[in-house]
Length: 255
Length: 226
Image 1 (cartoon, chains in turn red, orange):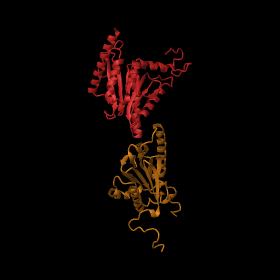
Image 2 (cartoon, rainbow over the protein chains, first blue to last red):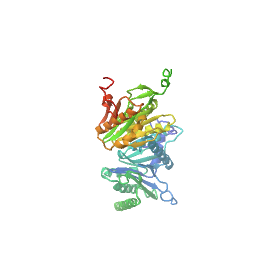
Image 3 (cartoon, each protein chain N blue to C red):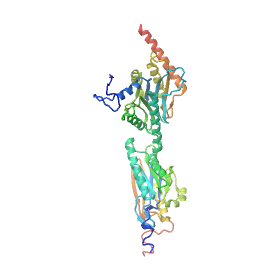
Image 4 (cartoon, rainbow over the protein chains, first blue to last red):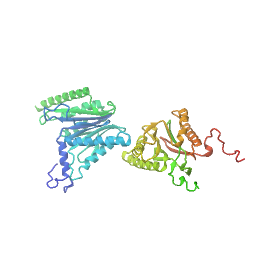
C-alpha cells in the first residue's frame, strides 16, 4: 500500500504524479506507530481511551498524559508525536476560549472540530512548515448531544460513532464494530473501551502500558473528566479478566 | 437671529427616545417611540428605532443614531456569518454578546444605549440591556433612552412576570406613552415588535390609540376647536 515517493517526497508542497502528498502520508506513519487511541459515542455520551506505552520504568505514573481537557464540555485524546499533539490541543483550547469570549456561549463541538482541522490543514500548505505528526480524537457534549470527531494530520476530519488510531487500530476497529453503541451507556462504554485497549495491546512487542480513560456524558454532568478512580479500576479489572480468558483460549487452540 | 443658524443645523442626529423590552409568557415585546432630533429640531417624527438583527432577534436603539446604526450593521453581519457556520439560528445571548463587545471595546467613541431582545428555542424569550459603557445584563424587562427616567417608578410598581401577550403589549404601549407625555425628546408614535416561537409581529400605535393620562385632553372635540 505504501511506497517510497522518491523525489516527490521532499516537501509538503509537492504532489507526486499520482496525486499524493507524501509528506502527509509520512506524517500519518508517525501516528500509526504510536499507542492505540480509541473513542466511542454511546447513547448518553462519549468515552475516550488511550493505550499509553511506558518507555521507561523511571516515569512517574500518570505523567505524560495523552488525554487533555479542551473546554468544560470537550476533551481530546492524542496519538503520534506527543509534542505536536500538545500544540493541537493548545490551539483547540484557544479556539474554544475565544469563541466563548466573542459569542457568549460554549463552542459547539462541530465548530471546534472545524477550527482545529483548519489549523492542522494550514500546516500542510506551506513549505516552511511541516505537517503535524499526530492525529486527535475529539469527544464533546453540546446542545446537539454527544459527538465524536477525529482529525488526521492531513487536516481531514470526520464525525464518527467509533474511531481508533495508532498501532492496534485495525483490531480495535473490528472490536468497536461488534459493539451495539446506540444501546450502550457510558458506564458500559468504559468497560468496553478498556477491554479493547487491553485486547489490542501487544505484549510481545511493547512492554508496559498505562490505560487512560476519560468521558463526557450525562453522568459526568456533560463535563469532560477523567473517569473516576473506582470506575477506572473496575474497567481495568474487567479488561484484564477478559484478556486472561482470551489468552487461555488461545493457549488451548494452539494445541 | 439665533433660530436662523442655530445649533440644530449642525448637531448630530440623536434619538432622545424611550425604548423598552419585556419578557412575557412565550416571548418578548420590544417597544419604542419614534422621535429623532437634531438639537431641538425633530428630524424624523416617525422613525423606526427597533431594528432586526436576525429572524429571531431585534435591537432597540437609543443615543446617537449613527452610532447605533453602525453597531447594528456590524452585528447583523457577524450574526449572518455565524448562522451559516453554525447551521442553526443564533441565540439571543450570542447577539447580545456581540453588541456588548462592540459597545465595550469602543466605549470612548460611542454613545449608544441598546436593548437586545428575541426568542430562541433554548432560553425562550430573553431581554438583554447594553447601556452606555458596554455592560451586558439579562433582565426580565429593560428600558433606555432619555424617556426611561420617567418610567422607573412606574415599572417597579406595575411590572409582573408571566404576562400574556396582550397584557404585555398594553403594558409596553402605556409605558412609552407615559414617557412621551413627560419627555420632550420622545414623541411621535409607539412601535412594538413581538417575537416568539411562531415568528415576528410588528404593531403601530398613533394618536388616538395611545392612552391618556392626568389632565390630557381627548382628541376630537375640545375647547380650542369649538
